[in-house]
Image (cartoon, rainbow, N blue to C red; front, side):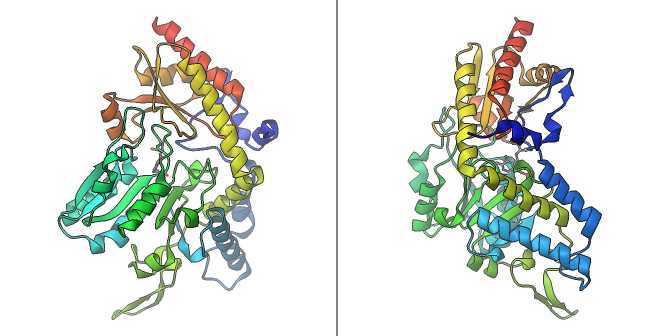
Length: 405
Ligand code: C6P
């Protein structure tokens, strides 16, 4: 059992009134709140040792470098990577996918080659590949989806063929909550020597990730969805792949030496971290990891599962509400439609009751196209949410139904 009261005490932002109601924050898939420990670590950096890293011999720079590199080690351990050289700090999942597309995949692509993604990807795992296809004449292939919002893997073996240069698939769908069976998919891709990128943006905040056990080649995620500052994120890549990849951006920190004739690139991971990074953000990310580990990833997963099951049962029992995304394995996300009401109206009426959800296409427009809807209302849970907030969600839906009756 989690001590939710004491956990919520660490998130001062949750303790406020919105439109004269206590805030019910159910928009965690868009961005989660930050515990006081993370906020304090960021402000401590600025108050006490703000300085650039890897450059100065002076005390503050050394402190900043140690804290930044310490955060990298925490990320390494958190996702069970083999080496901190496999951990590249980036701005978020989006930047990480673009990096892999341009640095890893682009050099090996020829016209007619294929990139395999799924129907339920976030735009961040669609558009970079489409851009790559435009640049090279490669072809984007799509793993289909079922009405439950699960991947339809009946054609998966055929979709993985000798033209496939990468499989890029989400671990957890942000629009549906589906947990995809990525381990089996990775194994199948590897059996055909196809490298795999996993978009873990919606998985890392909710479950333990072991990149060695998964054996994925790349795993990407964003800090701001896992209780860390915005503008932070991670690209995990297998060392031998990262070693072979050219740098993506040029500038400071990614070089060993520069002359007008030739630049010698720095070693991993710095080769991919051009320019001054988000130092405070990375330090905050490390503290967010400490925080999640202090609760325990298994505890987080179990508790959030209970919240999701309770919410799903209560909403299903209501009538006049349709849940979009009813996969067997789900995490955190409850997307729904209330009969006769546009999701944006749902979001507005919820806000009047202090309930924050996201409405729209959730940057997953192909999912909306599949279900023939413009948008959904989406509640998404974190470990600081409560069963009372699940009830508030249900009451919110009732209120909408009364208003539109
Ligand atoms: N999804 C949501 O409300 P960035 O913006 O780089 O931090 O994350 C992009 C991203 C990539 N993959 C998945 C599965 C995601 O869910 C997201 C971000 C947010 O669902 C904002 S659109």
